[in-house]
Structure formats: structure tokens, C-alpha cells
Image (spheres, rainbow, N blue to C red):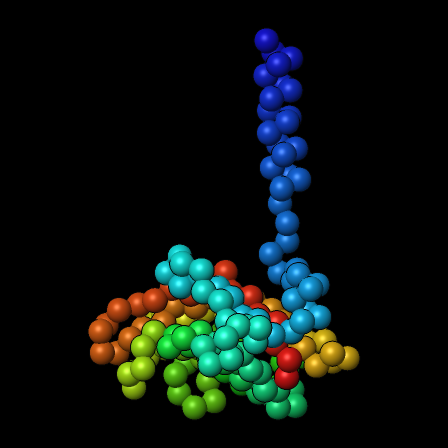
Length: 167
């Protein structure tokens, strides 16, 4: 009985160890493709890519030297945007998404076409890490953030974010 118990404990440990994978290692197919942004919005999968319906989905990225990175993704009427202002984007961060003022790194989520959207602020914030593939002009990485809607006073939780976008 003791041998069986040791075998079960060892097997469970080995299975757990083998099933672990590093979260920040991007899928090589997505890096080569370079046109996707995905995450969970309040626990529900959300995705935008350039392979989707041209009028319903889009992703874009703009890199200005090593000081500013702008990411934008749309799926239907929903959108996610991230703006990083730093003198060292090529170092990969982590970058705090905590502002909604000009030249503060920030993120937003919009789930309708109104003028107000969910934005990060000093109380609801997040983080982003990224890497640059300068040979293929691709930026990729991960992010998560909480954002606040000033009209509804609701908070949205954006988690498990991954992007791979040409710049």
C-alpha cells in the first residue's frame, strides 16, 4: 500500500511538472504571422486578427524609435488599445499601464460605440511586457489590466493577453 501511495504521489508530481509551460514564450507561428491580439475580457475569450472579416477585425502597431509603442485591435464594435511611452521599449519592460494622461503608458477597452470607454488609471492599472523582432518588424508580448468606465463606474478585467503585431 505504501509503495502504491508513493507511486501515485510521484506520478501526480511528474504529470504536473510536465504539463507546465512558460507563459511568456510566444507561439512561433504567431510571431511569423505577426497579426493578432487575444485576451480574456472578464474571463471570456476575445480575439482580433487581420485574417478575420476585413470590416469587423483589425490589428495595428506603430513603433516610434525606442520611445513610443501604440497597439490597437478591433473586433466588431469592441476595441483594445495600449500606449507605451518609454525611452527603452526594446528592453521589453515590464511597463506599468497606470495612466490616462498624455504621455503616461495606458490601456483601454471599449465595448460599444459611445464616447466613454474603460481606461486604466492610478487605481485600476496593469502591466505589459514585450519583445521586438527587428528582422521581421514584429512586436510581441503579454499584458493584463483592469480598467474603469467613468460613466457606468464599472471595472473590466483584461487577463491572459498576448499580441504579435507588425509595426
